Image (cartoon, rainbow, N blue to C red; front, top):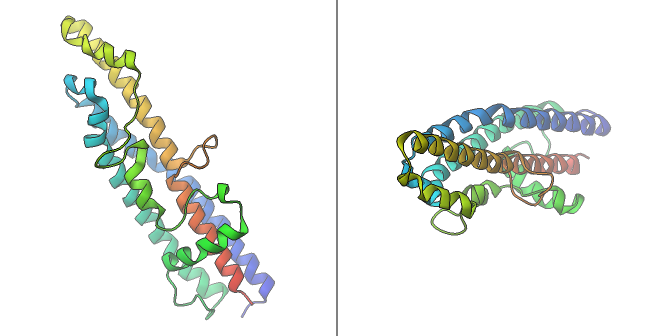
Length: 222
């Protein structure tokens, strides 16, 4: 059994390594989601430009939610493997020896809340479920939709009166603006926004859970 102080140092090293892994992995994976969303927007009918909130809710939202949930499962699976390996190496037979990462994250959430300002931890274990249904400001099955400028909506209404060339250019412009709006909202939900720290994000969820697990491990080292 390693001395207590060395165990704590090793646990903090594990936390730092996994935190950096999460921080690198999320931006690296964003382009694949942007590509899928852009393909969907490129294929949207002209008439859908007049009801972009509905199109977003029915066509884009499911893609984003599926991607978020899949990546969350993938990264937490990696964290579970790393957690078990680190436990065996550092604490070896300690009280968390039979725990999974998910169980430790759930238990560690309360400790993390008491040990750090709540504003610094967007949300914890299980938070991805709520983030999934409100991603991009949209609640699946109803609720608030993304807001679009009235002028843009009015502009889409006159598309049908324009000639083919002008209509094609206008449609391309509107779709580009739509993509930019969706990309920005996706980035906030995946990576978070320092100007809106209370807005849930996948990164905030993962780092919050990781912090809770780390504090739980340190708390149990005797």
